[in-house]
Image (cartoon, rainbow, N blue to C red):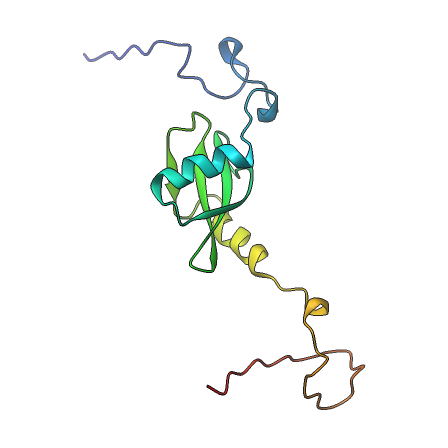
Length: 137
């Protein structure tokens, strides 16, 4: 017969077991944009950190980064010792939480696109618009 005993205490990182963190993670854990930048720059000084917020799962910070003109997402654990890249997928719904966030980051507000010198075809006040970008070179 094999019996495994696991000590309690630090093994419970979330919840209210043994005086661990409260349900509101930001009461116990903080990460500033400057801290996230310092952590990420250790791996690659060319990556810019644009934003940091709580991640989609407990124990992780979601760090919005920009490298080579493209935005991406990395995760930093609450201990600030590990960076995780890749997708977080919710098993029950099969939803790609990282992909959803990247989609939100890539949305463009059409009202902010300058159309002063644009070639307009059709009615300028039409209900739907299609904007085509082209590079003749």
